Image (cartoon, rainbow, N blue to C red; front, side):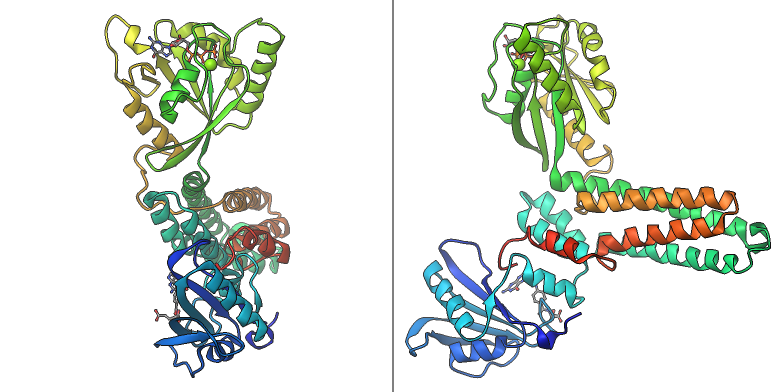
Length: 449
Ligand SMILES: Nc1nc2c(c(=O)[nH]1)N(C=O)[C@@H](CNc1ccc(C(=O)N[C@@H](CCC(=O)O)C(=O)O)cc1)CN2
Ligand SMILES: Nc1nc2c(ncn2[C@@H]2O[C@H](COP(=O)(O)OP(=O)(O)OP(=O)(O)O)[C@@H](O)[C@H]2O)c(=O)[nH]1
Ligand SMILES: [Mg+2]
């Protein structure tokens, strides 16, 4: 592994592209201070805001601004860092980056500042990812959740599980050395209890991470149901605009129509589909085939039926719903019912896409489904990514395997499963990682971050 001293110095504009009040060029690496002092024309004291003139190669003034020097290791990256805070002119900022490069820096790759913060141990991998998620957060709910991950709330729970797992591994490895004796004389009962606790904690963290992933990635929700039930009308109502064609002709929608909507801080990727029924012409049948295909990738099916005849719909779509993890029944056209049922129960929500009645209740239900449970809300939620959820699932699988092996007194196999589970957890925080994993993660960051 390289050390601070043989690393190059990187430079990039840290503020958003385009004109702004103030723009910041950031340098990180061993030559940062030297380069910045050449541009500022004076020595820089750590953590002191110097008002200086930024000079070009000929000594001409590029701009005046603030130079801020953070001496290693007390900086965002843990390396020497300098910020040149200029007026927010893209031309001036580009000139400052070019001048820095002429003086020995190179342009930073996307995410390279955060990658260095990770490599210097300032942030773990899940925290570095949270930096990018915070920047990309579309609203304050998502930003707060990313902030919690950045503060280490997720990482601490992963580390606690990894510590518990380590203790169990030590126990199992010790027992292997006494392989002649039955496990129960070697604290086998205590070991099983510890493993059971670990499995339960892993399940709880997996649920929390899944909620965090939904908050970050949104929920993939597919609207299905019989023709003419008002699926396209509901999409329009949720989107707040007339995206889909609505007519009173059954079989209007054929193509899939994708629309991203935000419901109380949660992103929903909505897909409107062709009504499901027996028969139909070739075009409609192709539409139904696509609807079924989309359901296979859905986190949630929103089944729209006509409130006046809900059971007609159920039969037609039931088989298509087999593999969908979550299903929400929406009884539409409630405005046409003789008496208003505009209430929702555990099994269904009544709405009118036409009048908008019942939509707030539908919003609340969608949000609760997206976050995993009605009571959990966003309180304590931290953002997580699909790769974190997958690692936790693998770890859970390995822990389950270890428990089975233990029941068969197969200590070697149990130890190996637990080692794999430990690595799975380590991948989340980056204590265990392949180089291409880092490249993959940081490449999706913005430049200057
Ligand atoms: N101007 C500016 N604002 C910014 C950043 C930045 O890089 N520059 N940040 C970039 O993401 C965020 C703040 N992140 C930072 C993280 C650590 C340190 C730092 O100097 N840490 C030292 C000192 C600790 C202390 O005094 O609090 C350390 O951790 O040792 C600075 C900024 C948001 N705002
Ligand atoms: N009264 C009333 N009519 C509605 C409501 N929602 C939809 N409609 C009407 O029902 C008819 C069908 O609506 P669509 O949204 O096209 O139904 P769909 O399920 O997308 O139909 P297909 O695409 O053909 O499968 C249209 O005439 C709508 O105006 C509602 O809540 N109340
Ligand atoms: Mg339609």
